[in-house]
Length: 293
Image 1: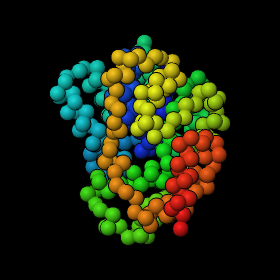
Image 2: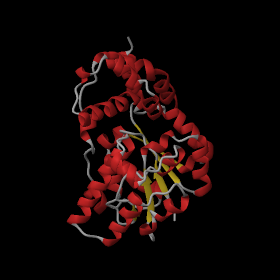
Image 3: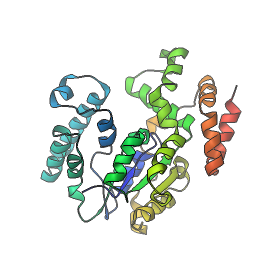
Image 4: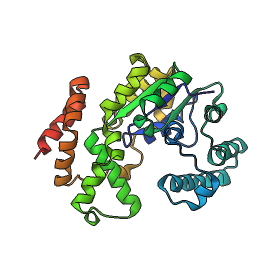
C-alpha cells in the first residue's frame, strides 16, 4: 500500500503545520512521524542500523535517536499496540526497499493516505522517476516560501537548537552556511518543480504559499483537501491550528548584511518564480530588490 499524496516541501514553509492539521481529518491517514525520509535516504544509501543509532553522532542518527525517544514517551503515556508495532517497524526494521516503505501505510487502509517529507524536494530525477513508477497517479503538494526567509528560518532554528547566537559565527562561516549545497538545493524551487513536472502532470501538482498559512489557513486547507479528494467540512476547519508550527524557526529580523547576501544568491530564482506565479512572489521580488547592495 502506497500513499495517495505526498508533500515534498519546501523546508521551513509550513509542512509541520500541514501535517498537524491533516492528521485531524477523519478521512485522512498520515504516519505518526511527520518525515519518513524513505526516498532521500534510499538515494543516499543511508539506512541506520541499531548500533549506528546508539553510537554514531552523525546528524541523521541524532535525529533517529530523538524520534525514538519521543515515540517511547508517546507510547508510555498512551499505550497503543498498533502504534508501538509501527514504531518498531519504522525505527528498528528500516530497509531500503519499497515493500518496507509500503508496510508503513497499512494502518491507513480505507482512508486517503499521505506522507510529508520536505527533503523530497531535493530528489534527483532518477528518484522521482522511481516514485512515478511506484505511484503514477499520486498527488504532489509543494508549499513555497520566500527563499531568503526560508534560508534564514532554517539557520535561525539551527542556532536555537545549538544554543548559539549570530555573533558566534564569522561572516565567512555564515556565507558558507547559506551557500552550502544543503541550503541552496532547498531554496531552488524552480529546479524542484522542473524535476517533478518532468514525470507528473500539472493536475497532479498543488502549489501553495507559506503566506497563505498566515492570511487564509482555512482556505488553503480546503483547497488542499479538494485536491487530494476529500472535503474540508466546517467542523474540521474549526479544529485546525491556525498558527504556524515550529515558530522558533520563524522569528528574528534578518541582519542587513545577511539579507543583502541572500538577495544576491536568490535574485534570479525569485525573479523567475515571479514571472511564473505572481501573487505572493511580487512581495518576494520587492524584498530582494530592496536589499540588493
